[in-house]
Image (cartoon, rainbow, N blue to C red; front, side):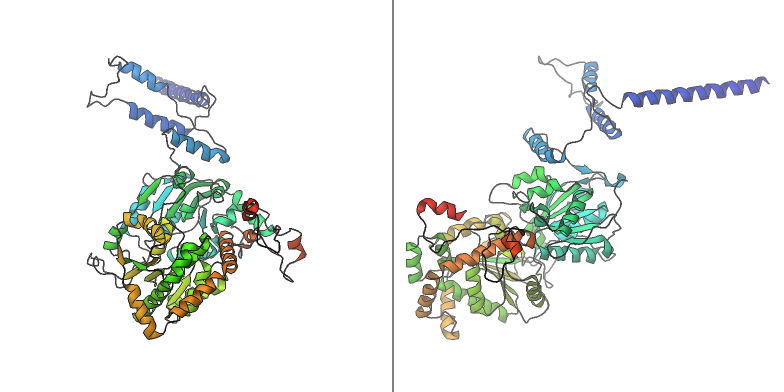
Amino acid sequence: NNNNNNNNNNNNLQDNKSQDKDNINNTNITQEKKDKDGFLITGRAEEMEENLRMLREPDDDSDDDEALDSEGRPIPSSSNKKSSSLLTTVAFQIASERVETVKRRAIELDYPLMEEYDFRNDTTNPNLPMDLKPHTRIRRYQERSLAKMFGNGRARSGIIVLPCGAGKTLTGVTAAQTIKKSIVCLCTNAVSVLQWKYQFKLWTNIPDNRICCFTSDRKEPLHPDGCLLITTYTMISYGGKRSDKSQEVMDAIRGREWGLMLMDEVHVVPAKMFRRVVGSVKAHCRLGLTATLVREDDLISDLNFLIGPKLYEANWMDLTTQGYLANVQCVEVWCPMTGPFMKEYLSAANARLKQLLYVMNPSKLRAVQYLVNFHEARGDKIIVFSDLVYSLKLYADMLKKPLIYGETPEKERQAILGIFRSSNAIQTICISKVGDTSIDLPEANVVIQVSSHFGSRRQEAQRLGRILRPKSYTQTDGSNRSSFNAFFYTLVSTDTQEMFYSAKRQQYLIDQGYTFKVVTNLCEVADMEAKIQKFQYASPEDDRKLLRTLLTSDTEMEKDQRAEDTAIRKNNPDGADLADAKRMAGGTTMSQLSGGTGMRYREIGASNKRHPLFAKRMRR
């Protein structure tokens, strides 16, 4: 009986102790819900505070890190502990529209914020069924870049810089399947949207019903659970009136919590229109991908608080030596201006006419035709780049080759690129600046650049990237250092402003390790070949005829360039209607005339002559 009584007493004591512990824990929980300032202290904040306390504890092995007062005397350890105990880690929320301001101010104070997403412990957002296929292989430098993003078991926001053709898309796909939450993928145009969809289906086993495309042509509804949304920056950032279907999809995008925002060609984000994208979509983690982290307006530093820091950047020449990129020979061809063209260039007052004169330099025309004939005979695939649409049409007509520019319909564009990729029926295509980014042409190995966007370093690197994809005969043992399998030609008219722009454009590529070989005698060979082969512009009379055409086509040139810029800037109907539109006979509906589609009127008189005081108003 005594033993039984003792056991009962012990049980009662244990029950009382457990109840006391529960009461103590409950009181601690109630006490720790809020601190003295009224902030909520969550379990994650307690974990961060514990980590800080461990960092502040003095090291037993070293006595050199003692805290000193203002007179240089050591402070006792008890006061150190007391001062550290005064610091408290708290967690609080920031309004979405003020996040950019807080990040920028933190960088100015030298306390940059680090965005991390604990996706493994996120039970609120549904998972996305997506895994890499067995045949998918990640390269070593891609592993390094992803290790910087997922180094501590969480997804860290930032930017990964990889050269064109080095597998940025596969890197983004791998990051998306690692997080396995709802993903919004932002691209620059509709062609890129289709390419990203193809790459996701190629490398992962994501179901088709979980992929949604949101473009001007396709407005697919979002899956109620986790889904992959692929769209363009313009579709998200557009601030005008939308169609009912487009507005419905946009409301669903804004009302959902996204795990990852994947941004292709992230260097466009600092633009005023695209900055809205970052604030309008609620994403836990942001990953930016680009090959050229440069801008001519010095806004590239804004990406530090819009997206995050640069996580990884690969060296171009190292990847070339390892065989992951084609070995490119960069050549600058000097084309002397002919006499009549130089005379008109020196006397021209219009900057656009000056640009057209050095772009349509007859020596440059003959050099282009010579290079195209030479490389087509070798079996190469050639891209001819020109920023001026008027000159692009003349080059395409001279070469009898297809051209792609801003107003080219999407079906025609895809048909030309498909034939170029799959057969030798088309070996040369002429492309305007719409082909600078997001066009995948792995078969191309020659670029001939006849005009460019002034001194843009980014454009030079992006155009070089069109031929950087590794060729099937590229050696991977480092022996390809002296053998070139791709060629990048920049044609420059001598003694013109184009030479200054060319030197500025090459700075980024020179910093990456590329060297430009200057060729001065190619035009002499091309002139001789033109007379033998009877090129279209082979005689001085042909040159004078071309000059007369250029001098009388100023209005047509401005019209073509304005239409090109509008098509590039607003590459979907929702935005294209905002461009200034003229009333065409029989082609305008009452809805458009009443402003229902977003059009606005411009006053255009019969005469183009304007007083200088009103010239600035007309340019607006």
